[in-house]
Structures are given as C-alpha cells and as structure tokens.
Image 1 (spheres, rainbow, N blue to C red):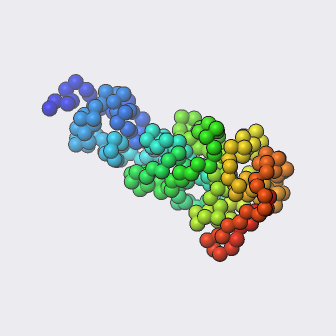
Image 2 (cartoon, rainbow, N blue to C red):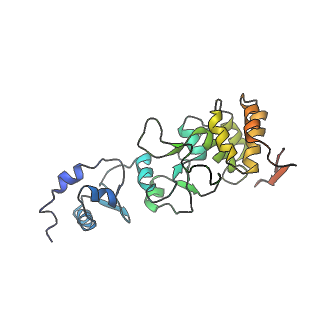
Image 3 (cartoon, rainbow, N blue to C red):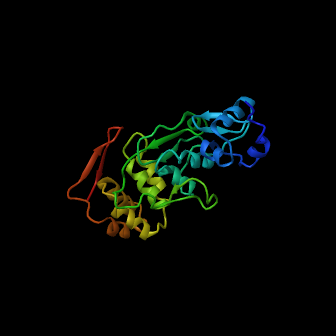
Length: 246
C-alpha cells in the first residue's frame, strides 16, 4: 500500500504546530486520513496517545493546548474553581503538583494520556440554572487567546465555594483564597449569583465577604438576595459543623 507516494509526510506534518496533541479531525484537515495516520505511527512519525489522538515523538505537551483538544470531546470543559483562580493570579500556597480542577457539563472520564501528564479531577455539577448561557464567565487567558477556556474570577469563586465542606476543599484554604478576591466585577458576580440556586454558595459568598471585611460585602448581600429562612448547616469531614446564617 503506497501511502507515501502522493503525500509528503514531512511537509504534511510540518504544517502542524508542536506542543499539543493532534486529533484525527485536525489531521484530516491537512490531508491525513485515519489509515495514513496509522501508517505514520508505524513509521515513527506520530505517536498514538489514545483513540483518535496523536502527538509528535519526543514532543512535550502543554496543558493549555491539551485542554483545547480535550474540550472537543467533553462538552463544557473548562478550568474552574481553585485552579482557575490560581491561573488568574488569585492563589494561596498552591502546590507545585496540585491537581487541576476541571469542570464540564456531564460526567466524563478524563483520558489516561491526559491524567498521566496533568493530574486532574473533573467536576460535573449543575451549579447554575439553565437560563444562564453555558459559556457565561468562561474565557481564555489573556496570554493564550486561542487556548482553553478558564473561569473568570467571579465564576471560579462560586465554583470553589460550591466545594467547601467536601474532602476536596477545606474551609481555611477557601477563606484565604477568597480574601484575595479584592475587586470582582459586580455585574458579572450579580448575574452568576442570580442564576445560582445553591443556598450554600450564596450564603457563603455573603457571609465570608462580611467576615473578611471585603469592600464588596454589602454588594454581595444585595446581589445574592434572600436565600431561604433559618440557618443552613452541614457536617464537615473533620466532624465540625458549617453554619451559614440567612
């Protein structure tokens, strides 16, 4: 089977950028069929990462480029919560190898090739109601305008607060990170709060903003609106009780 007689593999593959995985769809755009891709793998010009995903031998994958390719198969995939805050400059003692926090619309296992290179955990939680556009508050980083979607600080904050009280997010760390959210855009935060039915998230945002004496605390209370009557409480993994006032 003369797969290389009509297509020069060097010229074809040279047209593709390095630093990220290459999906079958992208290969087809430059004239490489699935059969030809398999031939390139056998010839050592490509390395198969998983079904329909390849990389160049000895290439080093970048996380943002990898997420961009991954998002093609995972609806709503974005960097969220604590990781998004850290990527946007709001952090508190983030570990060098701390797992990435990724969010998406539906449960979806992350492929092995991704987890091996970028340890991550995936959250599929309906934090906002269906009236909020699914891409609201999701933007690439300024330095990577064509890269992966990352929650803006206001959305990332609410995503992080939704995990407070679980084994994945401690109270003290979350409060320390929230203290670094000094000047959220109130129109964005207000829209997100209005479409977030979670009593816990709304009350945490208000109560901690007040306890931390953040300048936008009064605005948070106004924007969050009433969140039911009576105290909201839950038992924490360490045995303590988290109590949130109306």
